[in-house]
Length: 148
Image 1 (tube, rainbow, N blue to C red):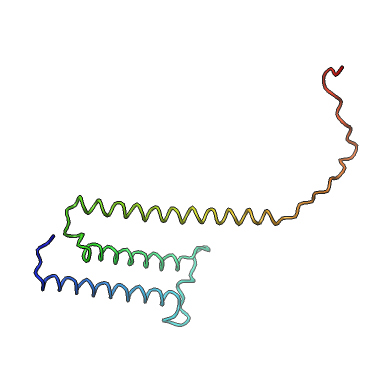
Image 2 (spheres, helix red, strand yellow):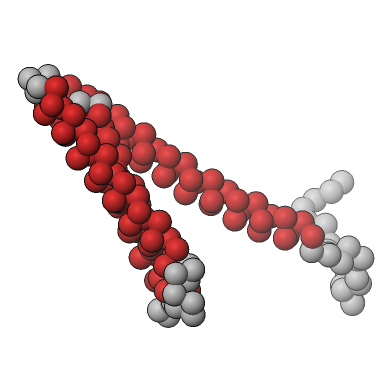
């Protein structure tokens, strides 16, 4: 643990709170601007390159990066992780990273099953002609082998 005085700790906390506030305002401005609420007629969220929603991807990427930055700032300052030994820091942050990876993997797996289930439902709704149709002049096959 670091040996900060009360005034130093208060100054660090106030600086961190200001940074968190500024980043939050930037996130809100990105969201409102991207959806076209700040400048009427300007909707970068809807922009596409070759059918890919590039505007939405850029907006989401910026929001995710800023949210991760805020989470790291809170963990390192308010949870005092910055002042811990490296071994303890790794033992806390590595499982957190693995948990985030697992959540992403579960969402991807769930999306796969959702789309697969939609395909199955679509096939279930198809009408199949179940009437037997004659094949024409097909004769039964002669028995094979010796049947005495």
